[in-house]
Every structure is written in C-alpha cells, then in structure tokens.
Length: 504
Image (cartoon, rainbow, N blue to C red; front, side, top):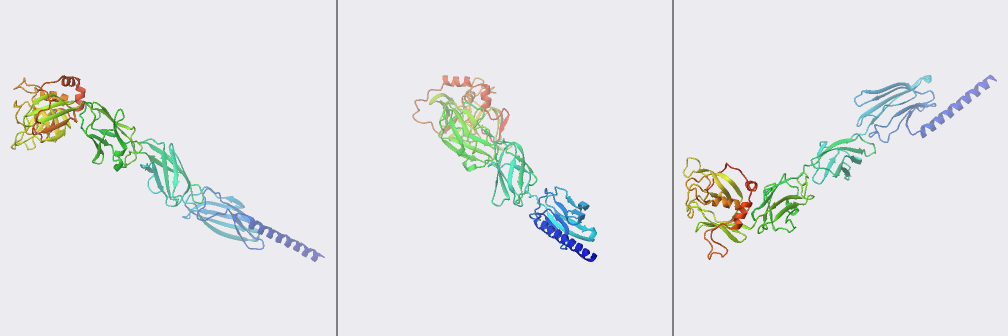
C-alpha cells in the first residue's frame, strides 16, 4: 500500500515537471528576446533584448537580461568595451538592465553566467555586438556658402532623414548614394556667420548625435569707378568699373550691366575687360552732353567668385558737361576751344620741335593736375635731362603729352617744346607777368574725357563757326561756374606729383 502511494506521488511529480518544461518551452519560443537556455529536462538560462543587427545596435536602447527556468539566477553579468575594460558588473540577479546610452561606434561584449544552485548547474555565454557608428564628415565644420547659395556635405557612409536648423532657411537634398547632402540656403545676409544643427539618422533609422556646423556667407561685392564724385565730364572718357574681387560668371558680366541716361535711354558702347577686376565701357560715339548717366547691375546674376552680390543695383551716377572739344593745329601753332559747335577761344601755343614733335591723332584728356613736376626720361647728369617743378595747369591727353602752362619762355606761335602743348600762364611768370592766362582758362573750361584732336594742318577753308580768338560769354560762364571743390574732384593727384619721362 505504501509502495503504491509512493509511486503515485513520484508519477504526479514527474507529470508536473514535464508540464513545467513544456510551458517553459512555449514561453521561450514565444518570448521576443534572445534566449540562452539549456536543453535539460528542466531548462534554465537567461533571455536578453534582441537586435535586428549585431553590427548596428542602437546605443540608446536599453538592454535587459532575465533569468529563465525554475530556480535560475544571473550569478554574474559583465559589460566590456573593445579594450576589455569592464563598463558594468552585477551579481546574483534575476533581472537587470544594462546602463544606457552606450557609446556610438564601439564594439561591446556581454558575459553572462546563469546558474541553478539547487541542481548545481551553471552556464556562461558571451555575446558581442557593435553600436551604430557616427558617419564621418569630410572636411571642416566651418563652411563658406558657395556662389549658388549651397554647401555640399560628404560622409563616409550613407545617412538618412537629414534636416538642418538655423536662423536661415535651409533645405537638404541627398543624392542617390545617401553620402552627399546638398544644403540650399535662402534668406541669408551677406558677410555673416550662422550656426547650423544637422539632424540625421543611420540607414537603419537610428537617430545620430546632432552635427554642429558654422556657415559663413561671402562679403558683398563692391565697385569703384573712375568717375565717382565727378561732374561736368567730357564726352568720351571711358567708364571704368573696378570690382572688389573676380566675378563668378566673367564672360557674361557685361550682359548684367546697364548704362542709361536718367530718363532711361540706353547708351550704346562696348564693354571690355582690363585685368581680372576691371571692366571698361567706351561709349559710341560719345556720352550725351549735359546729361546724368546711371550705371546699374542685375544683382542676382552679377556675383563674385565667392557668391557676394551688390548691395544695391545702382553702381554709379555722374554728369556730363556741354559738348566741348579741343583742336590743335601744328602748322600755325594754334589751339581752338570749341563748345557746342562754336569756337569760344583760340590760343597761340608752342608745340613740339622738329626732333621732339607733338603726336597727332584723336585723344582725350585722361589726367589733370593743378601743379605737376615734370622730368625727362633720361637720368640726372645726362644730356637732355630736365626737371621742372610746379608746372601749372597740366592736362595729359596721350601718354606723357599734355597741355600745360609754360613760364620759362614767351615764344608762343612757334614750336618750342619737347612734345607738349605749351600755353601762356601768369603762374610763377616773373619775366613776362603780363601774359594772358591761357593755360588757367583752359584748365577750368576743360574736364576729364574732353576730346582732343591734333592735326598737322588746319582745315581749309576755315569753318564758318571758327570765330576770331576771343573769350566768349559761354566760356566766361563756364569758368565762373567752376568751384574749387569741383576743380579738386577733377584732379587725380595733388600738387607736387612727379611725371617721369614727361615732355614740356
């Protein structure tokens, strides 16, 4: 009887143990975590958070471990980095969570020992995994905005879901590889620096640490001209626009510049480059007389190589004077000052001697000085050397050929110079103090850009418009209207300049 009762109890115990094993097997199969369980009749071991890929584990994800099986415990758990350093250790636990977040781009090892003390069973397992690596950005964190208002970021591996935040508008455009991201900027200021935070994910959807960049924008494009602040200009002075730096679209730069009168009438002419920074506009045939000229640009298309744009469309505004021209006749040593088609003043002058003749052709006054030191192109002590200080009312019209006052002789009406056009002046003239102030009158009547024609012979017959030599009312009016301030603006240098290789 006792024997039957004993076998009955053992049978019942075995039944329940088998049922528990079956239930554990079902639990192990349905549990989403990874399991490490022995294959004994009474299995034991542990379960751990599973990963989609052991090579790209989300370091922010909390890893949990739990003992599995009747009487099972986690006797020891260690977390190590790729150098073998123990980052975390725990003993005698049934359930625990590893610290998080872990470092990005690091290989880790988990060592777990599970045991069941009453059955003296123990198993140790090692599990290796690597957290998601942070993509490496090629190049510096400080970037200059390109002329097309963009920057391109290149990473050593693909990235996904890129967004950028800053005090300007930024849109992200990835290429097909996912490694190149083009950021296109809008509504930004020139010559400014912006902090940018780039938010992005790995291709497996793991959020990556924000990337902080600094974006700088190009300084504005600036211009200078040879006519800034000038008025009463002559009609054929070429306009020169100098840019602060080379242009991005140099071949099409001229197409983005407009030259018009104030009332909007386009002025025909030709643009040509002088060096890398300067454009020259030559009007054809001349500037309109007594007009205000405006030079403007297309700000969107005219940009520097760094992307800088002009801050305003209007580049320059200047005024032309009346139609004034100078005619030099070498055969009778005469200069006619013509205004609006009429001779307003005629002068006896001294042009170049036979061995140093005055150049002939069509020119214009390109430089003016109230006083100029003029020196020969041969050195001191050599034959032909000369140096004359404070030559008054000097106006260059071709290379070193100029109109100027000559106080050292009174031979006007016959050749006497080294090639320049000598004119009578009272300035420093102690020998002939009563001469007419021809050079001074011409200086105040003329202007930069005034056409000069030098001919070997005067035209025959004389034009009816060539009146006898006298100072006209219009000439007097023009001279009175010229203020010291205007005169100063017309000069490109002050007193005391030296013109090396000058003719006198």
